[in-house]
Length: 292
Figure 1 (tube, rainbow, N blue to C red):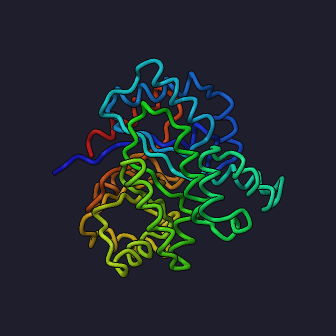
Figure 2 (figure 1 turned 90 degrees about the vertical axis):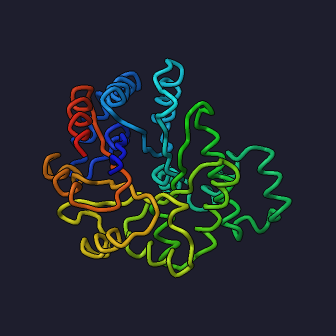
Figure 3 (figure 1 turned 135 degrees about the horizontal axis):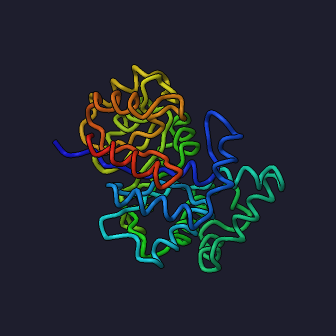
């Protein structure tokens, strides 16, 4: 049996906690870039295979430091999730939809900006959301150091689940083609509605073996939609495809032992991703994960 891959998650590094905002702020206050680098180095030395992260400025600084200090070997891969939705929401609250579109357009490279104008026309930018999204995702990816080993580029669940809900096959197809052709990586998707995503893919007769999916799996069904049972059934019947389980501790509600006892009983998992916040925590957690 192939061992499950073990990935470092980034929630603790960017101040995300599903149970307590106060706890998230406390963790964030004590985690400088240097300390995060130390946490990741420790996790790697105890068996971590990769890093799943959003393109948050802190994560980009951490990657640059890891590369500059030669802390990553060729087997360690990164799995960025795009777009950085939290950043967009803040901008939208401050500047509105038109202002947000203008800022995104300003940040795309001059060359890509020119291509977008030629291909779409200035007056139709707002009417070409896929073209704008594709070019902005390319901009976000270009911020990741070239030396990083990008194994997969995952589309954020906000975009993925909207596309599935509205049956927008062109959004999914555009991401698959862009990641495969431009970045030569595995197209990936984050979803909080795993069974519906799998159903949509199968209806379109696309091959799940060509993509990677990251989705919640945990004993209490936290963030597992439409239900824990439906997600488990979809996973058990999966033919091909790589599934990474996230939220395995239900945002901190479960203990690591409870979480892993449940994960050990699932079939067809490719990997799990789990956040750690101190070197000691990283060592203990990834040592325990070796048993999977």
